Image (cartoon, rainbow, N blue to C red; front, side, top):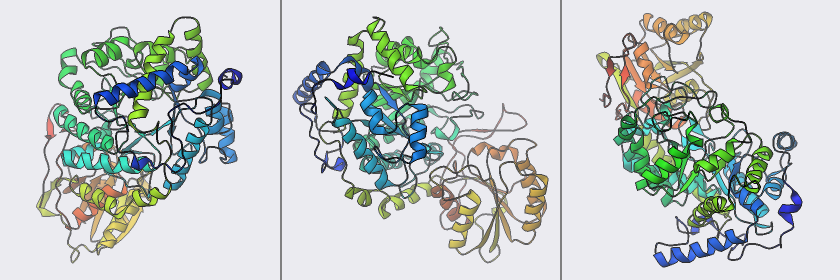
Amino acid sequence: MPSRRTVLTATAGVTAGLAVGTGASALGSGGRGTAGTDPGDKRSDDKRLRAIVGRMTVEEKVGQLFVTRVYGHSATDPDQADIDANLKEIGVRTAAELIATYRVGGIIYFTWTHNTRDPRQIAELSNGIQRASLTQPRGLPVLISTDQEHGAVCRIGKPATLFPGAMAMGAGGSPADARTLGRISGAELRAMGVRQDYSPDADVNVNPANPIIGVRSFGAGPDAAGALVAAEVQGYQEAGVAATAKHFPGHGDTAVDSHTGFPVITHSREVWEKLDAVPFRAAIEAGIDSVMTAHIQFPALDGSGDPATLSHPVLTGILRGELGYDGVVVTDSLGMAGVRTKYGDDRVPVLALKAGVDQLLDPPHLDVAWNAVLKAVRDGELTEARLDESVLRILRLKSRLGLLDRPYVDTKDVGRVVGTAQHLAAADRIAERTTTLLVNEGGLLPLARRTHGKVLVVGADPDSPSGTTGPPTGVLAAALSELGFTATALPTGTAPSPATVDQAVAAARSADAVVVGTYNVTAGSGQQRLVERLVATGVPVVAVAVRNPYDVAQLPFVKAYLATYSWTDVELRAAARVIAGEVAPRGSLPVPVQRADDPARVLYPVGHGLTY
């Protein structure tokens, strides 16, 4: 634990120049902050920020580098279970105690830490965090962040507006839609006090077996992905929220999840330049505020065997030197196995800073990491000047976002901004442009209510992200019923047993049509047997890939196949409208689908997509 005495004995008072009135509205600060675009304004603001850094203690500077989790819906009065979790994992009771003890520069919101119950609560939590920080000696606003990628990864659910995920947006192929997504999502996040979003994913997904990126990527085409990354960055940052391109130098060709292992990328430097680097270059050209590192080994870029997060050649040599990026660099979570395999938790944050990182995200043991960095400075391994570089970048970002002058949000704005009818309608329209029809033999789709009025909806029911109101089967059945069908849901899971398959087949025989949701189908799996048995009944079967579009290669006997790229409500409702013929499918594959029996051959190429 750091010394409370060291942190708290400085002269009390809010940092000079900060306006901290509780009535300030985050939405009124004009997007990218108050510094303006005039070079004189920038020089003046930089002078102010350097003065702030000059008055900070070493302990306060160390704190600014950390972005950490904290349990609870309130900064000062969380539930007892969250107090217990905080004491066990962080050694403090509340977010307010966390800030008083460590003076952290950032806090990340998660669903599982109970930070995101509803939009108004989130806004009040954000204000509570800012108040706790600004009442400290030389207190600075906290940069609050989250992973709101949309699609498969969302931390804030309904009633916030949820959009299709990245690969669905890739299927839509519209930079204008991507910019709209960023602008609307950014406005809603900002209204809740979240000023940094760890999105968009700039990885180029060229490996169908990638267990962690997949549909979080815009696709397999670097130029197409780059255009959408840039557009989404522009949208978020126009709304006054820092976008984050991740995971540098590129996580799209891994077969290992860096949460649980240490992936190795075998691309040559030439392949990296033409493939992985392209979306990151586009993000930098678009003015990206922050870049997140990857816990991957990339021998062609650094032969040391270190993860990119800890690599000076990758972060300082390539990202800062060659690509010319001078914004904030944030690590991926320091609790992931990919960054902990080679070094201990006390060495990882120090090595990350030496590599060129600015923000240290969610270390597993904050006390160990905080004290390790402080010790490295006192021992001379890290200079205080090196800390100043990162603290200044972080303060520049906070200033651009308007945090230094207007740190609080007006909770009255939440209902006027978050989940409005206009925003929800925009998400629905965009989703309709992403749904992809891969197979439609004999013109089975659209289903006619007159001949296929009684529909059985079966299939996978994976754990629901925040953008869902229930299992995909239930969402699809409800959406089809609203469109005039008589639809019944029968969830069969991602690994249906023979008895479950028999139950679904028996139910199918009394239906006019079956819609089956698939989720990462493999050869010989229960899902594959389920679909094959359903087709054998002779009842028309429509399959919907609710995550990876690659499923279709394992199901050659299906006569109609749609890809939604995720199982969130907005995508499933759009699929229902396509099935019913309310709208025509307009998406096209942003990744190739290889043959199951010969992966060297392409079954459906990039750009494939049928319509009617």
